[in-house]
View (tube, rainbow, N blue to C red):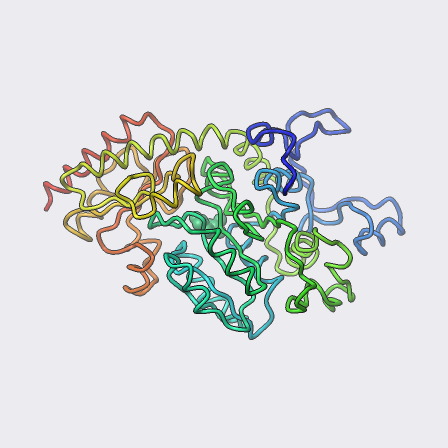
Length: 432
Ligand SMILES: *Cc1c(COP(=O)(O)O)cnc(C)c1O
């Protein structure tokens, strides 16, 4: 991580993990659409199962197409290794699965993707894991909420849907003092806009479903390890530091050093939780990632123009985009997101819930759907969709109140994007 990579970001986006196929010369990474791999002989099989030889056994554990994507995302983040999986939520599951025992606790920003609030608050509770949500705007809240049983802090670098920029350096200092890792969901920023490992993060998770694949055509997730956290030091991460009974007594940290979490993610996480990434999705995501820098440049340029247009619009009561001077996150964005504040943000429509729904329904170019980070411009009304299952207080805390409309600005001609919103706002005004 401290070593400066040999190649620039754009070069690594195209080439990392993707050498020509040694048998056929194929230049694009082949889609290894196979469930299993032939062993040379019984000894070879035994050493693969013992994790003594690197190779492939079964695609629930590892797959060459997925491995190429893992290497690429690890390189883009400046990490030591990565574990690809079926979705962003699977990546979160893999990370916590390695760190937590029943009865353990962790801290998370309460400004998170709605699905993460459900996963942490409800489903993780079934494993005996307790989350304490805190307001991320004051990093000291993490220090105040810390308990001896806390095993990790989880935040988003750029939080959906409120346009929140997280003070990663301050929060990573608190995690370090407590001797626990900082996990950063870097989905909305992508490594092009923000590099959490530079600011002290230990683990990065991604929903590659979003900007990394970028075309709205494939689900995927990635857990990236910086390789810097010493899992053995405190004895509080037994699955990584002690003999692991689920893998015939293997000690992951002693055996694999700075690759411990990455190997654990495959050998235990994917083996037993089963959320493997499909090779076709890895291929589509590899293809998408080649243009990440180009797409993100256009995404942020378009978002900046759309946000300025909305801020000046009489039917709009507020715009929450960290790229605007009016945003309380503008200074944090200048530090952590110097190339732009992403392309997902929210605004408030005058007239509340009904006006918000009317704007969404009146758009013609924007697609009304529950995704983001697509080449296409997307729109949704969180209160009636993604954040529907949360309580009113949780919705407001997450920046998803009744009047809130969320946009994910695509890479179309910006004048067309602006014109579509303009006519939709006019229709919502006429209906009011
Ligand atoms: C979409 C998303 C997730 C969940 O990812 P899936 O691929 O849908 O499982 C997690 N975090 C953020 C910030 C997201 O946008």
